[in-house]
Image (tube, rainbow, N blue to C red; front, side, top):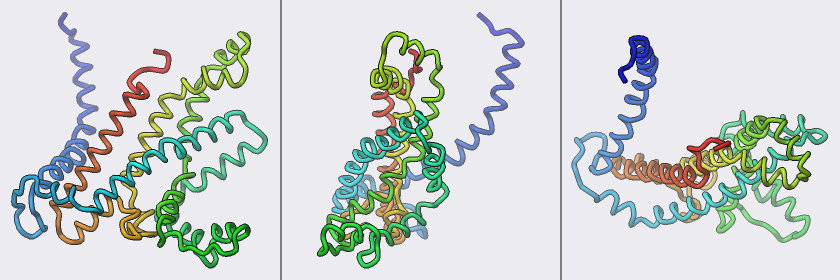
Length: 294
């Protein structure tokens, strides 16, 4: 069936309104992504013309111990982000949703870190984990007087020190889950209570399933933040000790400083592919393309 003149006119207006967004995506997202992908197959120092080298950059990258350890760290941090980080934010959202005494104050305090930059947090945690006057070692020495460790400079403490700089910083997760909880119609809770459902049954059969999309979105946001994590490591361990806390952004920056732009862009492509993989897996696992009531 042919579209009416009114429908065709509406399509033109829709296309006109979408045009700016399309141009922004084309020039500021798609074009840089394609450029990074194409130059990852070249030897390029920023001065001479790029020279095609095939898969040499990727072979060199995959053969580096720092890259192998960065992928191992990314896998471990992704597991921690999916379970502990998102889990903590989700539990806090469910607790605040019950509106216990002092819940407004707790919510306000929990929002404060949101206005502090990642770089500032990294410096704060360097003080917290300081051996002589840091809070963490001081607390541990209440039970073990002989505990003296520089967390960011000793293995295996460095990995866990970096992890703690973001582990409980789950305000985005809490806000997303709370938004879904508040969107559940009150009639649903009333009907469940009439049918004899207790608090645990309501949590398991109503609240959690209806927060599926926000939890899945939180996992994507949390893992992709780990893929792109830079300041927390660069300002604390610089990837050390050894390569214990190495990750892809640090490898990318090192190659840029060494004027190895082709190799740096190969690292960028791996970050991009890792993000796409996470998006596809979580999208499938949490059925993000389906509505809550489907």
